[in-house]
Picture (tube, rainbow, N blue to C red):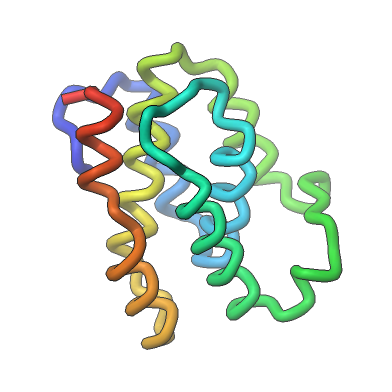
Length: 131
């Protein structure tokens, strides 16, 4: 984890997120970032575009299909738990979620390179002012 002062709710949610497969991490991150529930100063549209490109590499059919979260019970559960968080906890979880993706090894050099070069987690962290 990037932050030391997370609440128990955020830690539990991060642990659930950590247990997901790589493609599910990307699906959930796109879903949560598109409907983030707060207005970050940082432009997250670049993150969303990057994650959608990564999803296309992992699942070529994802461009033609709308993701139905009813098929992904674990993603639906984590998304529901996310909605229960306070505004500060949502900010912290979004940061931890992106940091988790930043550290994750997708076993694909192209994906790992794109994420390492374009997912500016530390800049996002400073923009949220959660330290």
